[in-house]
Structures are given as structure tokens and as C-alpha cells.
Length: 432
Image 1 (tube, one colour):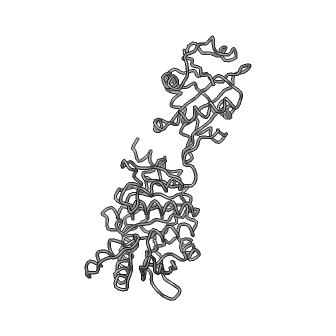
Image 2 (cartoon, rainbow, N blue to C red):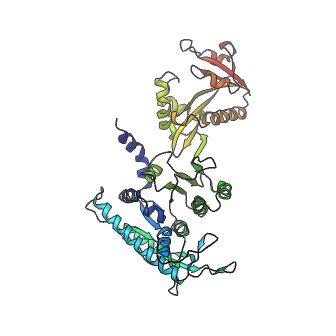
Image 3 (cartoon, helix red, strand yellow):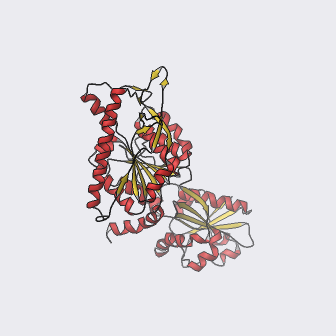
């Protein structure tokens, strides 16, 4: 079967989940200059065609730097913020205006070569961001550098309701008619919070947040961000991570950091279970919990391949529905990726650990240990002092976790009478 067929099937739940959601997407100026920008625009048009409400926020740092250099003006910064005097503001206005036209033109071009050919895509903007001056800090006058004062939530909402893509820049306007240069990260974060966006998507040069060893960090809670920010002081990754965390603290369910240099990074992040960037979210992305009747379908999908291989004893849907309260599961973004069951044995203080299964794609992340700990805790709560397990393939795994070889004669009578000698499972026990 072609890979794209499987990909489409697995992405269909996300297509449905994202429909009518509001995404705020931040595109730094570096992303707009990158050769992959055309692919990003095409992917944004695809999201729009799938019913996603899009607010695009674009930056302009390299374009401003280029214009300053052409005019022989040295850029000035303080605490990482550009000092925008009158001459610099002219370069900012020039750069932002040119970029807006370029983005609108690219969106118009890509729709003609996309699945939305023949339909009309509207890009809307205007004075939707109210700003105020930063003023003087540490004795340094920031002049026309400002910060977001207010996002026109109702105005943007009306444009989104009309199926327009809303385009915001790094310029804001004061009630007195002044223009201020803003950090696009600040605009994107405030827009996401005030709009109650479902997601904030932040583009950076790297695949996502990289740890001190250069390895991609897949998931973070906002309270885990501080440790990384200390390491990333002065690095643009730190700015993106701080924006993601601030959005989540402000009520945005999920913030994502993805690469503008990698073709398809946005779609991979949004339409696959594991994504391809870094997720910052308030809620736990993966949880261990007790199973419910709604999990039967997911359990069948997980254990059926192992039953076909003879690793697990076959269980029908009816059996699973009847015994569902015995199961604990690991749920990852709405999908059951691991399970285990505890069966107390009648007329004894022993229980049986059964049907321990982990999706092959997740077998090296300690999920089996998490489930074993969960089952042992449940057994102790029930007053059980011994845990038995019968296995044909994974004896070494249980030995490594404190289970000792046992035999049929050690099983309580109620379980020994059901032992399948033809299956010839090895028996192990562990004292609790």
C-alpha cells in the first residue's frame, strides 16, 4: 500500500479535529527569505482549505537590517530589542510594507496551483494591533519601539468568520496616530491569547527546541521551560520557547515550534501523532489511566497483531467489554499505545498481570515500566501480596523487573485449573 494512503488515513482524525479551529502562525523574516517559504505558503493554503481559521504574523528583522545597511545606518539594540529612531522607523515601514505585498502575492500565486484552484482566498489586515511606546529603560530611549497594548479581537473574529486569512505585521498603531515597531513574537503571542486560539505555531531555523546535546525536545510543560531559557539566554530559540510558554500560560492549549527550513514540517507537526517539532502544552500529552468502555476499539487495534502472532491470548470484543475495568492504558494524544490488565485470583491474595502490550513504535520509552508500576499499585490497593504473570516471549523482561520463575503448582487453585498446557506459558511471580 502506498505510504501516502496510510498517511492520509492516520491524519484523518486530525483533519476533523482542526476544522474550525483558530491557529496563529508566526513567520519570522528569515522564514520569508528562505527557499522553503513557497512550500510553507502552500501548506498554509491547504490548512485554510481544510477549515482552519488562520492568523499570520510576520516579522521583518533581516529585511530591516538590509535596508539599514543600504542607508549606512548602524542598528542599535538594548536588551535584545531594536532601538527605533526616526530614520530606523522609515526602514521598518519600508520593509514591513514590502513583505506584506510579497506575502499576499505568494498566497495569490499558490492558490492557483493548489487544490483550491478556482476558489477565492482573501487576505485581510489593517489597524488591528494597538501599541504603546516602551519609553525609556535603563536610561535608554527606545523611541518608536513599542509593545502590544491591545488586539482587536472582534475585528479579527469578523474577518475569520468571513473565511479570510488575517495578516498581521510587526507594526502597531497608537490612538494618537503614531506607528510603533513591535517584536513579531509579542504580536503573535498576544494575538493567540486574546483570540483564544487553539494553537500558536512558531517557525524557527531548527526543527524545534534542541537540548544541550543537540537532540530535539519533543514535549514540554510551561513549568519546564525556565530551565531551558537559562541555557538559551540570547539565543533566538529562547525567544521562541518563551513565546510558546507565555501563550500556554495565557490559555492557549498548545504551542508548537517547527522548522521553516524543512519541507512539510508544519503538516508533520499537525497531522501525525508524534509531530516533528516541539510541543509546549498545559495538559499532559501522554497519560497512564484506567480504561473505559470507549477504549475497547483502541485496545483491539493494539492487541490484535500480537494475538495473530500468538504472543497474547485472543480476546473478543465481548470479552474486552466485559473485562474493561481490569485494564490500564497509556493514551497518547487520543490514541491507546499501551495496555495491561490486572485480574485478581479468586480465593487468594494473588493477582495476574495479563495482556501487557506496547505499540511497536513506542517500545523504547519506558511505557511498559509505567504500566507495571500502575498494575502493582492497583494490586497493593486491592490487598494482594503476590503478582503472577504467564508469558511465552518476554520472560527476560519480567526477570529484569523482579519476577522469579514459578510453576503451575504455585498458582492459586482457581488459576491453576485454567492453565493451558498446550500454550506452555512460562510462569513468573513477584512478591508485593
